[in-house]
Length: 256
Image (cartoon, rainbow, N blue to C red; front, top):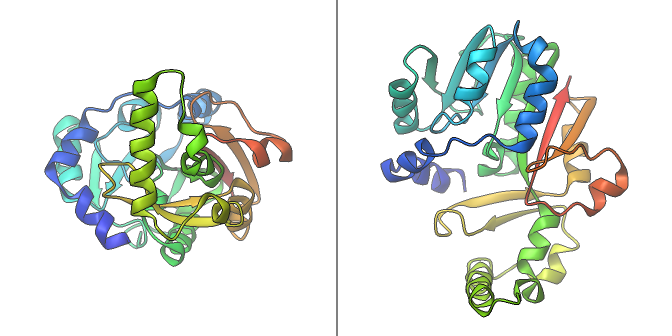
């Protein structure tokens, strides 16, 4: 899974695509606004920086900024776009270049944590915890398994617009063919799933997780965790919110 995804992100055409994305997510904007005063004194590590989408929003408001990505072509693009900031090619599974407690804020946006399997994911979380200072923040987004249930449900693809219905059903069929071992019924019993979804024409395999299980997964390293809807930035503050929210992505703001 990790090797296949890595090959996709080393594709220059994919890198150019990410360099054209500039919009900040609703959850990122809400978190940035809330923590702006703290960030003014912070050293920030931006993991999976990609085309530099988050650089333009976070780098100017922090005291020190470092962006990393495991794709050399992504890093080269960032260095050209933002020559005054530091970018390094590095894999999030091994942050050995950084000392313990080196950063006040670690950002891992665009579901970057989801492009490796279970053991690598836990290794990344452990490394991030190691380089994060006490009282610091770790912010990341992840695919929501509850949202995936809607994508696997054929009835949910039907619209009042016949063309939209046709496109939705074609995508639904492709999704099912690319993930033959997964059914809508089986998804309801799963806490995590590896799914090849429509991203970049089904080239990428993604790790999906239920929000309640994500909280449990984070518990060994982080004891304060807040969850936000990725588009609106609304905080999901009750168990009912977490159990029923069906947005495709969720943002997590964690403290050790």
